[in-house]
Image (cartoon, rainbow, N blue to C red; front, side, top):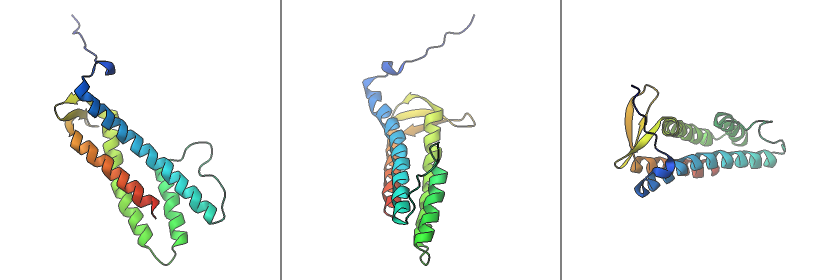
Length: 151
């Protein structure tokens, strides 16, 4: 006899899970907004330097390519002052940590749990992520975006 698998539809989540679903969506949106803002910032910097090319070609550039482009442009702009490059390096470390967290949430989401939800990492270990942790990462991502755009 084959055991019955109980699959829960998103519409079946309880109203108390709405904050969780909203927070996961906010994380995804915050990352996408960071990418788009960074693309716009680089386009403005390019134009200010006399280059009117668009970023990327037919495909959307990855975050790594955007950061490389930003690093190059800041280095050209601030030839005698490395503080911008130091700031970018610091922000990149934070972004990599948040990107790993984002990938864990998106790829490993299992189910709501009291105070948050459970995820499975790449090694199939179950972890609990609290809503507070998720909100903190979203806040950190928004702060990173502000600091990057201020460069």
